[in-house]
Image (cartoon, rainbow, N blue to C red):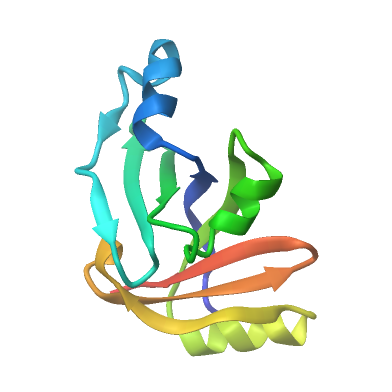
Length: 134
């Protein structure tokens, strides 16, 4: 088994800066990662943490971004996916596809996770990101 463990919760937003400005009362005490421009996924991303839970904020780089369609439907943004660390990516994908999941982004290395491989699966109407442990 792949030992699924929550890594983070992700939100898609039209603007990370505007969101953080408007929600300063909630997130000002959270630690913030540097803002990352992820050309591979066509997003800007930033991680926030209260020391227990991590939230990934995602902003599209343009209309071709995979989150652009979501933001057309949810103009203010919202919960996009849950991400799980797994021991091995390929067996975890097999487990989820056997349960009825569909791969929407096959395994690729990701700069936000030190080039560890990630994949996105749609399962029961929810997007799940899998992140391979080092």
